[in-house]
Image 1 (cartoon, helix red, strand yellow):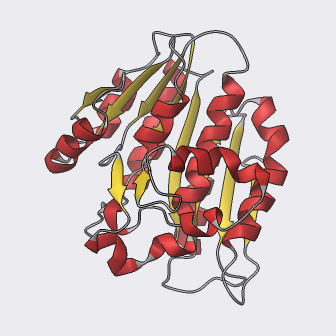
Image 2 (image 1 turned 135 degrees about the vertical axis):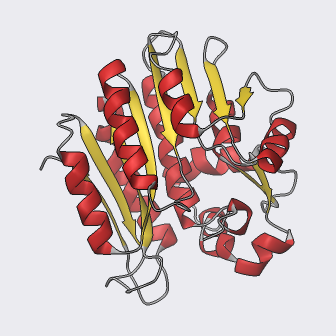
Length: 276
């Protein structure tokens, strides 16, 4: 699969991922002390929803545009983050995780971005011009380990692979295990698509064997029944989520589920500890 996020920017997976990232960082910032935010697969940083690639799939209509048509105040932080890169009331540009994280920065915080694809790395540097972000062009898994432990006492690593390679899950698992040994108290977020349930179940079992105690999995299922061979939704593995985040999660997830529900399907968003 030749994955380019410009085809999928602002879809339901982006909405859930970015809503939860904002809530997670805000929860960590309730405590004093600088944070280091690391995004290992940064992409281009900013996407044109009116562009040919986005228009070809139309996925934003089932994602970010649904949130802008919803009045639930629990979604205000996400809407504000998208609106911040737009002039018009209806979004024409979509901020990727780098621009979302940059908006969350306090003066003492650090943002480290990485994108291996040369063309996307150039676009990322352009999109992040004027921000405090450091941009790297390295292998994502090598950078993930190289940046740990963070120079600040606390931090978040966001891992958002394209899943183009068959070994992507294996590399994520092995790198997470090594990263946890170096940085057991750090927060790690790993995004993943929900396609083949059997493949996903095997991966969860492999992750469970790592013995990481605070390992939350949040999954957004678009359909009321699994659709074989289709994209069924997406999820996040979150290591060491802060208490304030997990306590505020249920109403936020319900707001997202209701806003993103497809016609004929109620959908489901679950949050469960991996060792349950």
